[in-house]
Image (cartoon, rainbow, N blue to C red; front, side, top):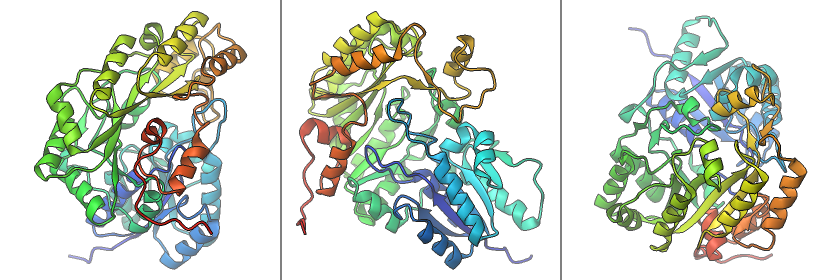
Amino acid sequence: MGEIKVMRVFLISSNIASAPYSVYPLGLSMVAGSLRNAGHEVKQFDFLASNRSITELTGELKKFSPDIIGVSIRNIDNVNFLNEQRYIEVVEDIVKNIRKVSKAKIILGGSGFSIMPEAILDKVGADYGIVGEGESLILEFIEKIKNGSTFKTKILRSSSSLKGKDMPSAFYDDRIMQFYLKSGNIAAVQTKRGCIYKCIYCSYPILEGDKIRIRDAKEVVDDIEVLINKHKAKYIFFTDSVFNDDQGNYLKVLEEMKFRRLNIPWTAFFKPGKIDTRSLLLMKATGLKAAEIGADAPSDITLKGLGKSFLFKDIIKFNNTFAKHDIATAHYFMFGCPGETKETVIEGINNIKSIPKTSSFIFMGIRILPGTLLAQLAIKEGLIKSGQDLLESIYYIAPGLEKKWLEETLTEGFRGIRNCVFPPDSLDSSLAFLHKLGYSGSLLEMFVSGGHKRNQKKHDNK
């Protein structure tokens, strides 16, 4: 048998978003883990952690001399209608500068790329793109490159859905991790993929499939122990689209944490629903400090318009369940949803202000993404055309609602209400300042509680 050729793979996280806090590039590190498991040499580079320096990027590329270069795209833009920031031009610039110092094939991937791959690949000018789970497809791509095979298409689509032990642990890069830990001490862990819910605006079922695929609970907790013991993480963020799945898979992870006597502050995204006392006590026993609740709409009419299976009274009840146990909560609400009228806007404002002991972040309009039910509705209502390129962002606001009136009404409706934030990025600079002072934790803890416990370190004010 011939010697197996080891490929040198340079992986780049192109994300530059740091609001409301910087998020470690978990997907990139899971691909890195898969490559290392297969025996390849991997270098991870984070554009944000490197102060967005093209000079540092090209310098590292020259030193590593890769055979293949992967560029991960997390988001297309910041989905903020009132203060939009685009990220694709950043990726375009990265690729242009890679070409100056390397002849390696460039392949795009990541959740942002998978949403609209053809348009992004065409604009950015890379060689190939991976849609879907990159951990297995990157290995297939490498094998073809090694064998000199040609590709029928530039867009490679994953035909398999990883589950259980097939989903690799992330290979956390310590230098990159230390940058993100300084931005709140939050480290990312994934426990499952897929989403069974039918929210009309959401791309998760498109990106990860409409069936839940769980990782092995012991391997998830192994990752947590690595983050605690090796990287000195002090706060865990479970990145699942919905942590508290109806099947109760999340409890297996918490039970394994309790078995190993792990108690570390953590947070996750929750769907309003029923949580029994035993489950809640298990969450607290393992360190739950804050719950980010996917309420999304503030009235029964707009909840139905988004495809939600719960009512506003259920949101109140769910919030109160956490509040009784001194767990901070935050809600994210969108105005302009299907079915929205002036009357539901006023109702929604009053409903949000009525939620006790919480914080709420309010968005205006919904970013339309291809393949979603919202995109189909927007075509039907004449807002977009069938097959339209959505790389240039278009936001859905229900017909009959005037944008200026909606912005003015939301601004006035939440004026002076400390726990209701509109526009949603109005606290970004304050949160960044708290992180620089050494505060750690999720944004809602710092916002609601006035700051998590400060790190025990001296601060130099020079």
